[in-house]
Image 1 (cartoon, rainbow, N blue to C red):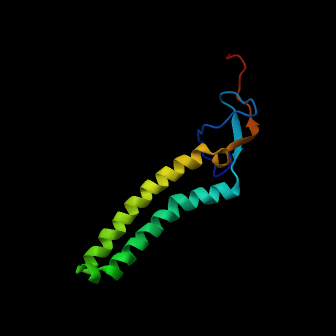
Image 2 (image 1 turned 135 degrees about the horizontal axis):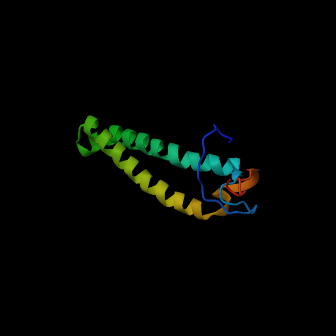
Image 3 (image 1 turned 45 degrees about the horizontal axis):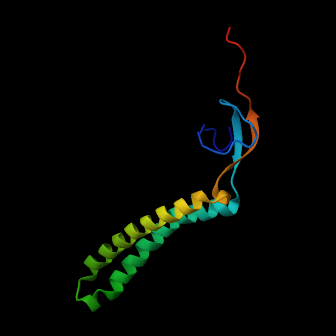
Length: 115
């Protein structure tokens, strides 16, 4: 078991003819992994910060208290980025380059008769 020794069940295309119970190694391109990680973690943080900055800087234009508008816009932008992440995540999930693939069968399952 690679990657920390934890077993994980994951649906991937069975390109190696693995059987139920086999342990397989999977791989994903570095670029795809970095894009997906950026999308999931950084886009919401960027939205949160942008909302806070916009609320802080433009509160006076709306005759509002910056301490109220900044968090309101921060969490609004955060919510919008969650929707964006979900939509883009589905599109990325449909693209083959973002899907993990089997690399090799690490260990075959015991298929012998039970004694």
